Image (cartoon, rainbow, N blue to C red; front, side):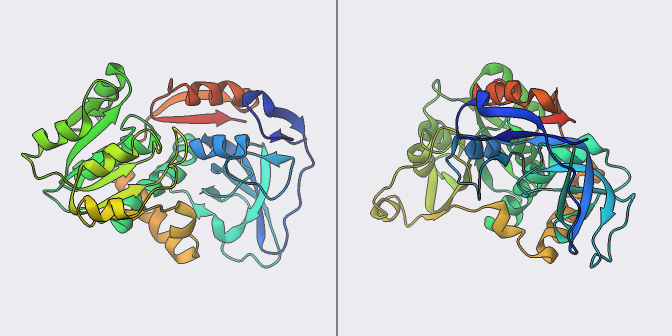
Length: 324
């Protein structure tokens, strides 16, 4: 028997249905994975609501998971039944078992448990490419991380601090501010209470910032640009408050010849070699203790709708994991 959370038409959390589905057989280049844990990410909301288009309906939500290989296709040579594996950016994770292309899987180190593996792949590899490749931060730089108490935000704060950065974080509540401070944020600003550009100017002595990492989108975009120094980089990697509307790119010139990028983990890990290197760097950071994965919420997979409601209401912190 195999069950999955599926969406038959875009909508709210109520559109998610727990139903029985066939147990698939792996194709020649695939592996069958029995999930021990599945991760929750904001991108799941985008697929559920229709902001991000899916190949076809009904669709099984979810982009990351961890478990054990049960079977492999005839062309798979680097995995075998019994291997502990994890993955990210592969739609269809909200289920008890699934098939997935073998080159999308990475072997999970013995020191990392399934729940940690399922919760860290998408968020942790996102933090890795943001800090190491999109804008490679350097020791001594001051950076801004929006949603600093979220899953990616907490990892960004810890990792950037370990790399020698001064971290400014934004959060929505005082409770989240304390969590961000505990995870490496040197300065924490509360949305709606602090004038972000003015406070950044004060903190930096007028120098402003070389980079802003913004997963909020519409609500923070303009303020984020105003926090940048000339030639600064605006990294817009999420849309929690809605997509950024079209704007005149001349604004980037007027504000100091700024750079703007909208990166995705899918692009940065599209090649198997890049996926392996990104995961290896993340595993090393976690095993060294530089990054600690905070799993602050767990739900039964069948209760995924409840978790989506909490996520959209900004009631979650750190990572959320489903148990099939």
